[in-house]
Length: 336
Image 1 (cartoon, rainbow, N blue to C red):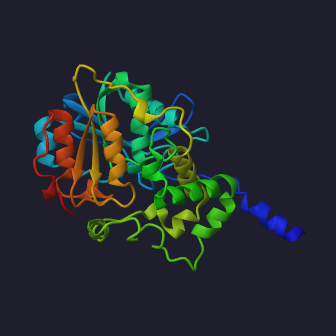
Image 2: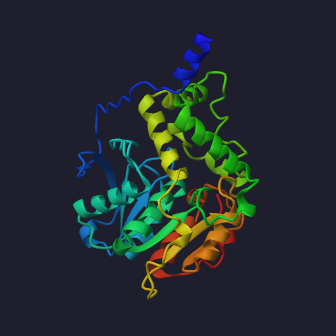
Image 3: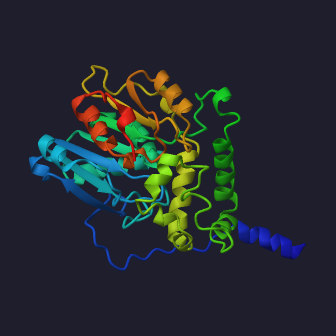
């Protein structure tokens, strides 16, 4: 019995987090709380740009994510892109006090220190969408426009109807993952790094999470290297992913479905981009959210999965809709 209790205790514990970045290759800013945030700039020079856009990466990704904006369009419109490693990712320091609100404040401070102006555009992908919801809540006055690409849906939002989420297997997976992340992180760490579990069993090319079109994309891109068994064995990587997941799917202090239109005079717009065949976030939930927030412009890719940001033509459509107000005419032409 004593031995069993000892095993249970160990399952709830994790070794002290260790983080050592021997060579920092990217420029970084120092935030007001002392943390460092790494960033990357793309597009036309900042001082010559017409549009300044901050792109927020998703779960297991980084500022090195590939956003497929055509070079001709970048130069034609004068677009400057600012990508950054969210707290704990890449070359950025972790934030032990991470919250939904802190994500928006990191974005605001990054924009201020790099002097990109009083207003800027934000684009968030997948898990990188909850910082965008946070921006819409806490710093709407700083936004020139916003796009959420396959944004994750937190099943704890009070306004979600039970008939849409009650039997959703994704909701149950999230509930279990949250429980283990909070109460048995050691056991969760042991589970995801076991040698007898195939490295692709959880995410990569798993038809439980990815559509046929997505799997074609995964044959062409690096996939999710941060989610590999080797990387997950690194304590700081596991901690970053666990904390990000817990914040994104935990209790928020606001309900996005109750947000007010940040652009009441139609001076700009907010967009949601969703794949009809997305197996991570069901299109029914995105349709419901957009229906409750009529000021959000909803776009649905007929054959799209969760990886539509990598599909040919999608990023161009996102940018033209966000910056120019153009409505995409044929989203069925967006494909891997």
